[in-house]
Structure formats: C-alpha cells, structure tokens
Image 1 (cartoon, rainbow, N blue to C red):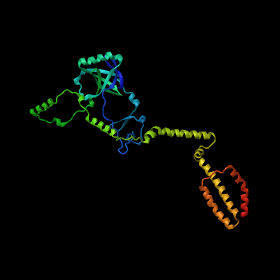
Image 2: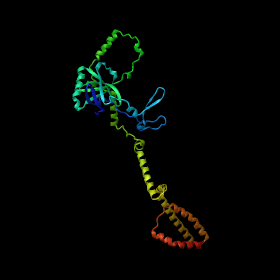
Image 3: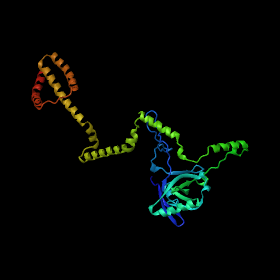
Image 4: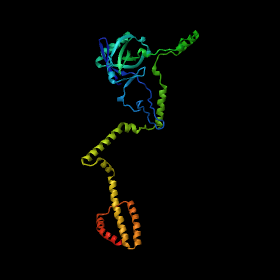
Length: 358
C-alpha cells in the first residue's frame, strides 16, 4: 500500500507520528464508454460555455454563484490563505463511548501506521482505547478538506474513520410514518420467529458480489473466444494533441533557418523556397524545349533541301509543326557531346540551304 498522508496523532502531551493508508477499495470492473461502431473511446473535454473553446487545467478556477446570480471566482491564492490548523496533525478532541457514534455518520476508513520510533506511544493509545471501550473524536485535514473522524481499534491497528458533519445528514421527513398503524400481537410473534430462524453470527466472507463475478466471467469468455478488437487511437489524441504541435514547430523552425541562410547569401527567401520545389522540373523543361527545337529545325531543313519544288516546301512546312508537337511529347534525350558539336558545325550549312530554297 502507498501512504496518502503523513502526520501525527496528538492527545495531551503525547505525540504519535503516523502514516495514513486507505483501508478499503472497490472491486468493481472498470468499464469505459466506447463508440459501438468502431470501439473508439468517448472523451469528455472541459469546454467554456461562452466561447465553446477547450480550457486547459491551468486556466480553470473555482467559482461560487450567489443567490442573486453573481459569480465569485476563487483562485489558488485565495485557498492558500484559509486556515487549516490540523493540516499535519490529528487532534484528539475527546473520548466517547463507541455506541454513541451513529453509523450513518461514518464515511471512509483509513489505517494508521506508526513510525518505528513511535511504536510505544502508538501501543499506549491503542491500549487506552481498548481498555476504556471508547473511541477518540478527532479533527483532521486530508486533501485540503477538514473532517471530523474517530479513532478505534481493529485487531492491532488503530483505524481512522472520517465522519460527516452534522448538517450533512438529512432529516427523514416521511408523513406516512406518522400514521397510526396497528400491528396485532400474533403478527409480531410470527415476524420475531422468522428473525430467530435466520439468526446467525455475521461473517461477511461468506457473501459474494454475484454481479461482478458474472461480469468477470463474461469478459473472460469473450477474451478466450477471440471476441476482442484493438483499441482505436484517433490521430488528434496521439499526434495532434501530444506531438503534432511539436512537429509543426520543428518544421517552422527549419524553414526559418533555411530562409535565414539564404538571406545571408543575398537570396530572396520566398524565391528560394519556390525554386527549391520546382527548380529541377523547370531545368528539365528548358533542356527539353531546346533539344526539341533543334530536332524540329533539323527536320525542316532536310525537307527543304530534299526538293526545290514549292509544293514540296509547303508539305515540309506542314509537317514541321507536327514534328515539333511530337518532339515536345517525347522525352528529351541528351545527345553525346560529339553529336552536339557536329550539329553546331553544320548550322551555317543549314542556314545557307534555307536561303537558297527560299
């Protein structure tokens, strides 16, 4: 067990350092609300009723609404100013008979464990409670809330049981109970006989929560039969809410670093960003256009040189655009360096042939 509180029991001049442990725990099966269609968890977000925005925990305060509708906002600083004299001390107020504590007042139960150096005063307090058959009425502050409580002995352990304040117990107001109801002696005798027939010593270990047991068996049967599915995790919970903002910030920081480096070289950051994505494509496009132009011009020159007739020249002129279109569609191939040099040397001859043909 893990201690949830550490302090001391103070009665008279005796001070007993102790640690507080939760003595009870519910055995319920924890079930989540999920979407029937895909098994996604149903989440609840803290949203402001005025602007509809989700509110972070650090921005949430506590408020009290007055009878005339005014709102009083209380901050952590306001709560820090409130007195909690018993914050780290269990102050014994009085010792009373155990039967005078109405069970309806009892709330949560805790175990008190003494420090190793406080074993003797702890045993002293425990023995005094057992010998006098009384419980100690105390005041204690747990999790910033002051409560009444009683100390009593269970086996060898001193148990602290928190109590409701008197004004927290409601009065039973049932008018039907005020009616005059007559019960015949024979009926009362029969009821008493029934009670005696079921009389026994209380042993809670013989009772079992049948519903929880059946629910656990149902879940185990589904697991063994493979009737399960992997829990779904939406992207906004894993990536966007946890790491998404960090990724976006990282990309923005990288972009700023790139822009700064380009500015240091005297380049325009916007043009550099645009060029970085399309520069290779535009370079390939320009090379493809120049290569296509040379191919189309060479084809037209050969057509004009092959015949001097005007009709043939017109036909070649008609074929030239088609060849240009085909060349644009076809992927450009890089010519070897020697072929490119020969084409440049042959350019004056082609120009001379075109002038004669015209």
